[in-house]
Structures are given as structure tokens and as C-alpha cells.
Amino acid sequence: MARPVNRLSPFNAVSLALGLAFLYLPIVILVIYSFNASRLVTVWGGWSLRWYSEFFHDRAMLEAALMSFRVAAVSATIATLLGTLAAVALSRGERFGGRTLFSGMLYAPLVMPEVITGLSLLLLFVALNAERGFWTVTIAHTTLTMCFVAVVVQSRLGSLDRSLEEAAMDLGCDPVRAFVAVTLPLIVPAIAAGWMLAFTLSLDDLVIASFTTGPGSATLPIRIYSEVRLGVKPEINAICTLVIALIAVVIVIASLVSKLTSARGESAAPL
Amino acid sequence: MSARGIFTRPARLSAIAPYLWMVAFFLVPFGFVLKISLSQTAIAQPPYTPAFDLTQGFGAFKAALAALSLDNFRLLVSDNLYILSYLRSLVVAAVSTSILLIIGYPIAYGMARLPRRWQGIAMMLVIVPFWTSFLIRIYAWINILQHDGLLNKVLLALHLVAAPVVWLSTDSAMYLGIVYSYLPFMILPLYAMLAKMEPALLEAASDLGASPRRAFWLVTFPLSLPGVGAGVLLCFIPIVGEFVIPDLLAGSNSLMIGQTLWLEFFTNKDWPVASAAAVVLLVLLVAPLVFYDRLQRRQLEGNG
Image (tube, each protein chain N blue to C red):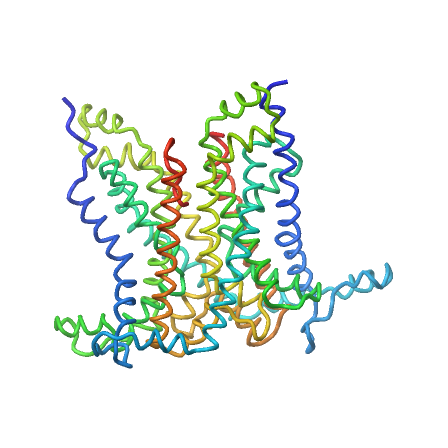
């Protein structure tokens, strides 16, 4: 009889545990220190919500946060629409002219250094004489995040059984109707996950936003970045903790949505 | 005509809007980068003399074409600053990608060996930090690494060091930050490959007398190579152009190309030179990008 070769060895368990500890420890420490009463970030002065109230009285920070939210919500919505269309075209459109260019344009931004994407969009906006601010950042973020949405939705579409669509069409549905009635409900979890991924990516982005925004409309990461360059401040810990909490809520909703809606099949991973 | 055939037409039509968007906001902007990299620097807003102005007719177009210059590129190759920062970017990316592979592989391997129902949870745990802001995660490390930060406190308490060690503004801090930030990008493709592996293959190897170690190198590792390739590219390409991590964690005496580009653009306001630097960076990354695109397409469309 074969030995159980596929078991978790102590080496596997230890590397997995160390890896996860490495990923989470810094974030846990950051969160704990955001509740520190002391002004010195490294001295523990007891629990306090002082830095949170500081943030809620910091007008510039709040405005930046609001700007980031608006950009993230609008760009994620447009990106989800365009990204889903792109995914449908790539996984159901078979061959069409310029397909290689199309998929290349969609996959390249996933790994393209952000300095290049940011610089090139800025030069476009300057050439068009567009006023830089909310809309330029939103367009830039849509361009980046729709590629992530396309990949998430496309991998879900690829794993679907196409005979369902074909059966619907054999039963007299036209293709659009077959898609709306059969395919769309099955990929809703992936679309929702795509929207949330786009939202958090936009909320996080520093480099592209720095290039494409104008004076007076800084996003939250831009404000945080300029503060961080000057050193560690407890208020920043509090803001970071709030952002982490928000993202945690988004992730929980994403996984609940994908559990609820894809009860019949394997659930779609958020990425 | 098959049902599949009818379906393709509306699907193709759905490409139109995203196609136009990507051409307008991804492809065309590269044209502008190229154009401005060939223009002269000027002290004006925007700070370059336009290389073409189509409203002036064909004569002006010809004049503008004659005015195009490779000066910015000449500057890039003649100035050590740029050559050094390109080299540094490539070295940093290569070293960190190797560290990532060495650390990421055992973690992905451990995940693939967990009982099925824990694998989903482990995958979630690896993905979650990817959703959390890069900037926040780097800031978390600044908290730990600063002069009187947690790391120095622990080291002092354990009497491992006599005086606080300078961690911030060093290359070690930068490598730590890069490895920390990109670890999920390395683990996920590796895990995807390893989880797909047939356990029967390893059983067969062991039945034929291979030791577990030999079975790993003869069976598991070769089969996971596509995942290794995806993970390496997914880390290497963006690290070459990384800006935030070296800017916040490394010292300022040697810059990566992303930082040089940023400096030229925001501090020196030399847009043509920044654009030329971007063009060169892009050229350096063309080969890995094309390779990555192939891999991605095979993975997403091959089984479609």
C-alpha cells in the first residue's frame, strides 16, 4: 500500500504558520497602536480613541477621504460595466479582429508599473487640456480596475458549463436573452467581487492618483503619503485602521454574496 | 449554424465599449509619452514644446518632425544617474523575486497540502492583505522598523543587540517591504498549480522507490513550473517600476527608476526626460510583459 504522501508535514505546517504570521503581524501591531493614548507612537500610554477624534476634526483629511470614496464608487461602477463586457467578449466572442491587441491591453495594466500608467494618462489629459481633478482620477482608476474586473469575471465565465447557454438557445432564446436569463445570474458573484476589488484598488492607489489629480483635490492616499514622509503619526494609524476596517467589511460582504448566490456551484474566489 | 456560432456576434459587439475605452485611455496615452519623450524641455506650462500641432497643417507637421530630437534619450545614456537607477531596479527586482520564490513556495506548498475545506480559508487569508492598501502595509512596517520601534525594542530586550539598529532608510528595509507586499502575488499562482496536482503521481513515485525529497524534485517541482513562471512575472514586472516602497523604506543615495522618473516629473518638472525614462522602462519590460500576456491568455482562454 502506498504511504500517505499527500499529508501536511511538520515542515509544511510551520512554513504556512510563519507565512501567515508574517502577513498579519504588522497590520495587527498598526491597529493596536492606533488605540494608544500616548503621542509617542512607540510608548504605550493606555487605550484611547483620541487619534480617531483627531481624524474626525481634521478637515483636510476628511475632504481627501470623501474624494477617495467618490472616485472609488464611480470608477468601480464604470469599471465593472466595461470589465464585464470585455470578459464576455473575450470568453464568448471567439475570434474577432484586433482580439490579440484587446486582450493585451486588458492584461498589461495588471502588471504595468504604475508610474508609466500614471504618467501616460497625465500627458493625455494635459494634451486634451482637461481640468485635472475628480474626473481625471476617476477615468484613470476606471482604466486600471476594469482590467481586474475583466480577469475575475472571465475566469468565472471560463469555468461555466456552456451547454446551459446552448440549451437555452435550443429552447428558443435569442443569444442576448440566453445570456441574461442563464449566464448572468451565474456570474453575478464574480461581478460583485469584481466591483469590490475595483473599489478597494481605487481606494488604495497612490501613484496613478498623484499623476492625474490636480491641485486642491488630493485623495486619501496622497494625504497619507505626504504625512508618512514626515514620520509616524498616531493619527495616521487611526486612519489606516479605519480603512482596514472598511476593507474588512467589503471582504465579508463579498464572500457572503458569493456564498449566497453561487450555492449551486463552486464559489467564485474574490480574485 | 451551431448555437455557439450565433452567440459570438452579440458577444463580439460587447467588446466595442471596453475596446474604445482602452484604446483611448491606455494605447493613445503611450503615443503621448513617446511624442513628449522626443520633444524639447521648455520652461512653460505644460513644460515642453509640442512636437506636433496638427492644426497648423502639413508644413508645420514637417517642421515639427524635423524638430524631434533624441536629446532626452542621449541624456539618459550619458548620465550615470539614469543608468545606475535602471540597473538598480533590475537588480532589486531580481533579488526580491528570488527571495519571494524561496519564501512563497513552502507557504503555497503547505496550503496545497491542507485538508480541502481549510484550503479555501487559507486562500482567503492570503488574499485579504492584497485587498489592504500597499501604503498602509508599508506604513505598518515603518511603525515597527523606526529607531525606537518594536523591532529594536524586542532585539534590545533579548540582548541581541547592544544599541538600537538603524533599519529605516536601508536596503534591508526595502527588501523586507517589497517581499511583504508582493508575497500574495507569488503564493497564489504557485498554490493554483500545486493544488491541481494529482496525488496519485506522488504515490506512484513513492511506490517506485523515490524518497519524498526526490519525488518533490522529480515530480512536484517540474509540474509547478507554470505557476513559478506566473508568480515570478507577476512580481518582477511591477517591482522594476516600484516607487512607494523604495521611496519610504530605502535610503535616498541610490534610486530605483520609478523614483527617478517621479523626481524628474514632480520635482524637476522635466516632463520630456521623465517620458523618455518611461519609454526606456517600458522597452526593458516588453519581453517579460509579452511572456506574461501569453501565460495569462493560455490560463484564462485555453480551457474556455
